[in-house]
Image (cartoon, rainbow, N blue to C red; front, side, top):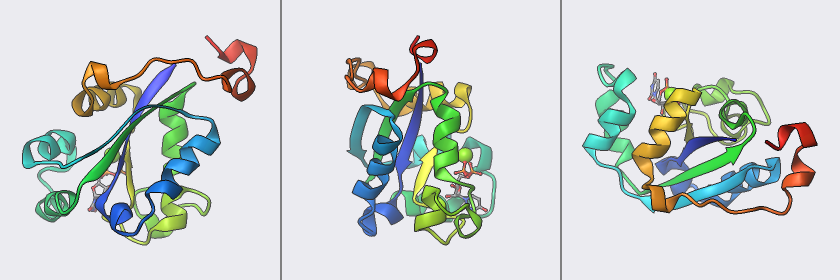
Length: 154
Ligand code: UDP
Ligand code: MG
């Protein structure tokens, strides 16, 4: 089973969308294995956003990501990295597909309500970046056999 990282960003916190967003992931059949509210600092943001740290919008993005706490979540499921990206929608929220989280709840390129890991390799790194091993929970969920077919439950 794969795991992936989701951050619920400051715009979603301010706009009271936290429950709505978590609900989307739960309803899909994903298993929450970690969840916490945290304040981000420059160091973790620079590491998390290395691929865009040299862009002219980065200082504003960094300041905004520190403007309130965020909620970090790790969810688990079969091929979940791709599934969560599909549920998230594209970066430019006002063009994101209706039915996706960004498509339904946001209008901005920067204030686009959530972060989601974009590859299996990055998901592994990002889950490690935001959660200590003892903050990630292994437990049985009784709905498992109804969410997946037998061949997917490995
Ligand atoms: N971002 C921005 N302006 C841009 C591109 C990105 O403010 O022109 C922000 C936005 O919040 C985005 C984040 O930087 O979600 C990370 O960018 P990335 O290209 O990784 O997009 P994502 O994977 O979040 O869709
Ligand atoms: Mg990204």
